[in-house]
Image (tube, rainbow, N blue to C red; front, side, top):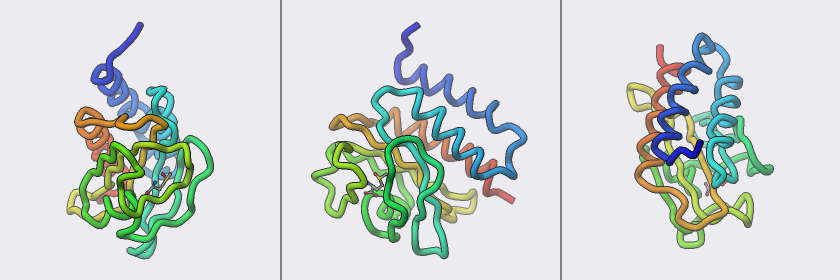
Length: 159
Ligand code: SME
């Protein structure tokens, strides 16, 4: 059966809730499985993964699916570092138009980055998804990926 984007995300949300149930003490496992579930749900996703905040100033590479990536991204740099500095989702339709974009792969053409924020608004990392296609991400992606980010932070980073 062919599902549209919204239907695929609705299914994914249910799948992710079930997948991470009872695994709140396994940050690496949860993030690894969620990156896999997301990555394999959409053919257009070329790189899907997490960067986690260390020492309050650097994003370090976390669990991901896709080709090898940069290990460290300073806060305020690139799409990931800007999204976490500004604590908001960034949709970049064409990475060549984003000043300071960090090209981990020359094949990446568009990108969406969602900050992972605790319930008190503290940043803990980002979810970053890249596509080989220009303009691959829209409001629907932002809406559902923010829901998934909220699920993860509630599960993993809330007291
Ligand atoms: N392009 C990102 C860096 C991470 S890679 O895309 C996996 C950025 O500019 O922050």
